[in-house]
Amino acid sequence: MALPIGQQFRYWGIAAAVAMIALWFLGDVILPFIVGGAIAYGLDPLADRLERWGASRVVATSIISVFAILIFVLMAVLIVPMIVNEAVELFESAPELFARLRDFLSERFPELGDAESTLRQSLASIGKTIQERGGEFAKGVFSSALGVINAVVFIVVVPVVAFYMLLDWDNLIAKIDTLLPRDHAPRIRQIAKDIDTTLASFVRGQLTVCTILGVFYAVGLMLVGLQFGLVIGFIAGLISFIPYIGAVVGGVLAVGLALFQFWGEPWMIGAVAAVFAAGQFLEGNILTPKLVGESVGLHPVWLMFALSVFGSLFGFVGMLVAVPVAAALGVLARFGTEQYRKSLLYRGLDRDDVAEGPE
Image 1 (cartoon, rainbow, N blue to C red):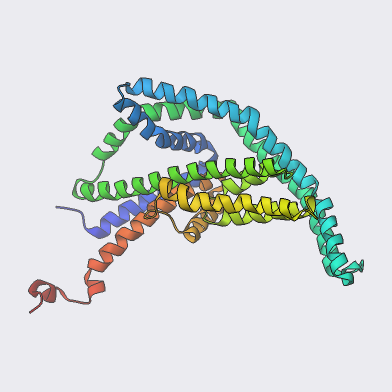
Image 2: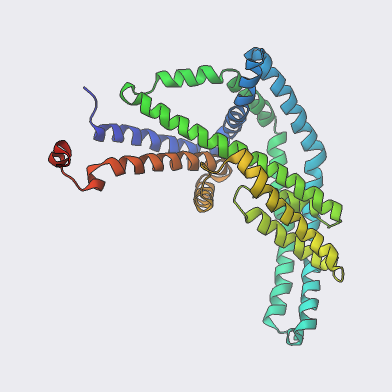
């Protein structure tokens, strides 16, 4: 006899609560394992493709691991230091940029020339604050990230976890399948398949889109000659998983800096704006339709809400799991909505009406 629905909800609710509490208390400890598992999940399709081409799972995993380590080392040695330096320089130059903005506004609006003007004082205060706090923030973020990356435990654990999880991924999924409640196994498999489809289409595809856009923006701005073009392109690409936000934030920063750097050269300012216009065209018409698709994307508001909630509750680990959890909850919400539409609660019929059917 199957367990009543109420008891099943109680047991699974307790299990979910225990998982959340464990995530709360073990956030920093399990970070390498979450990162390693995420890497294995992302690389599993590539390993499966190599297997179809005739390689064993061990050989496929070894090839992927070697190339992944080489790419990671090259990025850490060549790209990250450049981004850090430009970010620090951008924060350090903030007071000068705000001073020039103040002078520009003073020329157009003479009433702002008053030293006691609220706007004048605000601009000066903002510039000093960004210089004092922004530089520390940039150095702290990157130094913390580099500190974690350079920590012996992180360096050792993440590749090892990723390697073994990638090696045993199919066996791991098969073992998890044997633990599913037999009464609900087919439905759980279908929900898990839908979640995997969402993650594969959105997360993997969107990461590829963000990477391509980041490189495009950075290279385009550097070719135009914009100062701090590399860090602005990196920021724009990093947040491009939220539609339009990456282009808007990056475009405002880039055009704002271009106004100071290329004042009197409108064609150069237009060139900076054209880089982001071309990036938006590339994203909307080529990259997103091809790599992400249109049917499984997560709503930007839901995505920002999940990032805010999980980031505030669980810190950096929460930020890492926010997108997968948001995707899973989105699938579960669609499933729940579908079940609700089939229920008596939605249809407004009693059981006798359902049994008799329409006359």
